Length: 109
Ligand SMILES: [Cu+2]
Image (cartoon, rainbow, N blue to C red; front, side, top):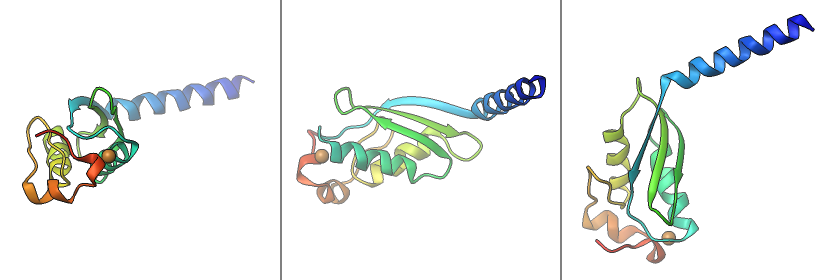
């Protein structure tokens, strides 16, 4: 029993230290309001190496990301998202990428 508690404690400590290396950030990503946009934007963020979690809220347009800051940063994540057609606070998309978005995912620019 004691060993079990100890190993559980060790596991928890490992989990906490892994979590400590990860940073989280929230920023606005422009997009439409269907589930396709949500998947698309989250895929853009997750395509960046070091991004562990990406969750975009289609109502508030806020994207929450959790990433390893030894591998990437907020600026690089925003750049990857903008490259695929969605505006972010620091990086805007170009017309070509915007035009490639599915109709439902177009937004007011
Ligand atoms: Cu959409």
